[in-house]
Amino acid sequence: MTEAPGLRMFVDGKWVDALNGRTFPDFNPWDDGVVVTVAAGDADDAVEAVDAAARAFPAWSESTPAQRQRVFLTAADLMQRRAGEIRDLLAVETGCGASFAGVQVEFAATLFRQAAALAYAPVGDALASDLPGTHALARRRPVGVVGSITPWNAAVSLSARALAVPIAVGNCVVLKPSEESPWSGGLLFAEILAEAGLPPGVLNVVPHAPGEAGGIADVLVGDPRVRRLNFTGSTVTGRRLAENAGRHLKPLLLQLSGFNPLLVLADADVPAAARSAAYGSFVHQGQVCMCSRRIFVEEQVADAFTEEFVARAERLPVGDPREPGVEIGPLINEWALRLIERRVQEAVDRGATVLAGGRAQGPCYPATVLTDVPADCELALEETFGPVAIVERVPDADAAVERANDSPWALSTGVITGDEGRGLRLARRLTAGMVHVNDSPVNDQPHMPFGGSLDSGWGRFGTGPGRDDFTEVQLVTSRATPRDPFAR
Ligand code: ADP
Image (tube, rainbow, N blue to C red; front, side, top):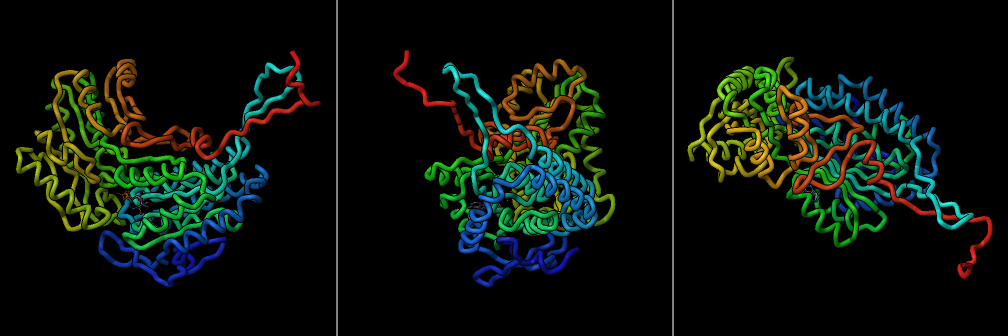
């Protein structure tokens, strides 16, 4: 792993200490060892970062597509060249196992290549005009400084998407990574993009100590030079951010919590359904916003499905994510582990049955399957960010749709069925922002519109729709000579 530079913050193309001189330890969730000590930024550093981004904007917004393309193609190659090292970093910083870490690195590299192509995408439309001789263009242009706030859970892919499209279309970014992933979700990108030739100030990364996000976020929300925000994280924090942003009339893209259903219909291939459910519920120990938490199974296949799903859950190896084959690593921190324990215990005390897992093993919580969870338990009402799935029998597909939609969250849904057409018809009735027929809800490609409905957020990431969120349309009309507005 690269040394010292990653320990400081990255502002205006330079590795600098926090203005207050403070640092904080970045812990390995497996053994509580200190992975690295990181500069602990605050509002003053955020102001410096916004200054740098605002200074860099005029030149970067006028940079050629060739320059932007070269940066992102080089960065994609660097990501892939350093894949092994980045996987190790994700393991020690976020407890992520090798397979999901590999998915993240590939996602980021692919995204960067698509961002490179975006540099050459058409920037607007030529419009028809009812005024003879008047030409009209609706052209998209970058907005200025974009503030990006990202979580730890898929640190590499989620921070990559928070900066790639904004920068590729000509904006400058101030990235505030999570306190749990300042390196893999922040400083790593500063290093890679600087090496790839990104000019100073176009990307600035301001990490901070636990519990100190607010001061930096307040600068990003309140500074008028920051023209757009994007946030990936919990609904609670996103709502607070949106309230503040509303006061400043500042648009923001919000990708928030999910409480995702997986529907298993009676015509499903049962082993395939169990495989989708096991991946969808337990990948990265259930710490992916798209994870399936509620599984609605049609009565006819409920016993067979549950048996296979439980068997798969029990087989998932638990331990140090650096060990080959380990699928269930540590929860991100003690607080997260205790929350899961408390919620599972509450459900059990009130009549739920544990079919697999259900007891912490050191810093890990094994893949856990519950059934008969009372509807008013916290586990049944809220997203629980860990490897816990609830299986519920339903009489038919209509009931499955009704139960799936009975939630304030609507991020992603999977439908497993032997009839693709039926799955597509059901998709029309599902509230979720993303529906995957014959796949788990955990499914994303960098160019596809990623986002939820209702309390799961606003707007869409993705190199297609994301472009619109990080640019603004300017209407320009022109004529060879002045129009006579009195002419009939
Ligand atoms: P998670 O449960 O994924 O950690 P959070 O919403 O707490 O979800 O964190 C997502 C991001 O939001 C992180 O970068 C975190 O530092 C940041 N964050 C936490 N508190 C605030 C706040 N008051 N304002 C803005 N961002 C915040």
